[in-house]
Length: 391
Ligand code: NAD
Image (cartoon, rainbow, N blue to C red; front, side, top):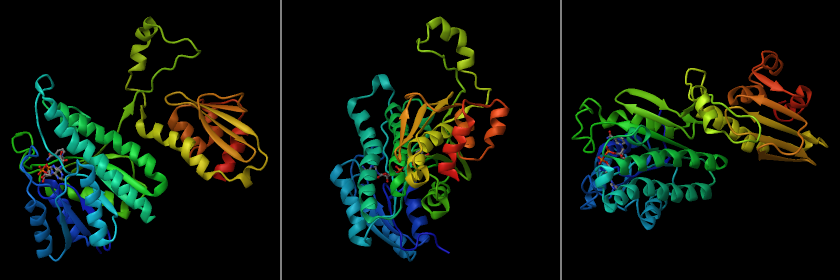
């Protein structure tokens, strides 16, 4: 069974390295592939139209379907033209893999503005422009879509001599998370990968051995682009050879000072160990994002005015390791407001993960309350509101 029959997949920077492997793998899985590549040297100089065409020939020889596109991802007109190539040749776009990239390594103190801008333009601006053009088309098509971006450990963890590249790649990780949230309602999933492979980009890096081939990266990208990854969005995965991982942000459990007075420096100093203590079960970025999404998007989407009837209620979610919200229900309407608003009928207080699990019914509310992991001022009211959404 092939996974991408009748699907159109655009891969930027697919004339060589990792992108070429993605293109060959998608074509093998039955996709119509747009092989985009501006061509040229590792630093983006000397564009060469033939680069994309060579990979298209390779796909045709293997019996696949592909078209070449030599526009630059970093120009607005170029990004639009890439999407247009997919529309004119195959009638639309289902998957975009933002992979194009260049390098201009230099330490920050010595870097020229040109070196900074060239790298930011191709990686970060190129990812933004192509994502925007693809999303506009996907939304107009009215069917789901997938974007896979290419980040790097260089940005996620830092790498000497790559201030421009690291900033662009960390920017792509942040952009991925925002795009995933914004595209949720359109059924468009957005994830990123951080690959490590021997290509011309890593030619001169001894720590990247020949054994880490660009071919190793493609299965993860195809998986994320396929229906097998339904529901997976806003996340960052790593591939090095056959070793796959997820990178996620974590926060310490942290300390919240009660009351309205700001922290004094001496208080921060006194609490520093607790604030930065990583040994307590940390709140992961995913816990916080899941609760934020539930309260700001999930509940309003699930809200059924008929079920709520004349209910007038307000619950203040006091999230000890995240953002506080008040959910207000009145006259058949629901509002999710940041912070504490009005005089809530109930206060539910605890860490993001426990609140999420308890409110979605994945953990028993009275049990969590009895064990002290969560505090609730009016358990009946919280259960009443919970039933509107989860019964
Ligand atoms: P590569 O140089 O072989 O591939 C990059 C491709 O992008 C080239 O074919 C190039 O012509 C094309 N390109 C450059 N500017 C373009 C533009 N403006 N428009 C369209 N195409 C353009 O390098 P690679 O290692 O295959 O890199 C692929 C992606 O993976 C890049 O985003 C890179 O930053 C990322 N990455 C690679 C590694 C690694 O270990 N190789 C590590 C982390 C991230």
